Image 1 (tube, rainbow, N blue to C red):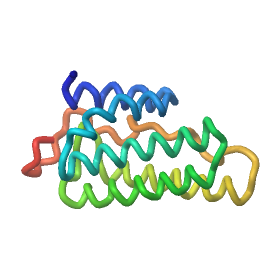
Image 2 (image 1 turned 135 degrees about the vertical axis):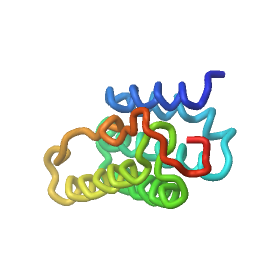
Image 3 (image 1 turned 180 degrees about the vertical axis):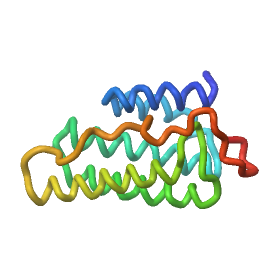
Image 4 (image 1 turned 30 degrees about the vertical axis):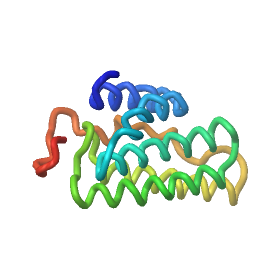
Length: 137
């Protein structure tokens, strides 16, 4: 099995390419083995990928909104203890999930097309920066 960092990067590339189901798959083995904040962080990312798949691939905005809401809550909780994990600004990822939720609710209410550009995790990447907390970010 590859390292968590390798799988996070692979999943992020898949996510940004609009391959949300594959991103979820890239993270799932590590999520199943993870504990604590790492587990919650990965679950939030998986739920965000699942939300986009459910909405933009399967055409189900209510399911998209629900999963994005759950993802935002988990990521916001993790960001309180460690602002950066896996090369991501966790609070930024939480805001991204919240934006997806809001857009999905608007899409459900108004019909038509999804009302915003497709979200990208690279937009909340930390790059080489580290968060400075006690966690091994």
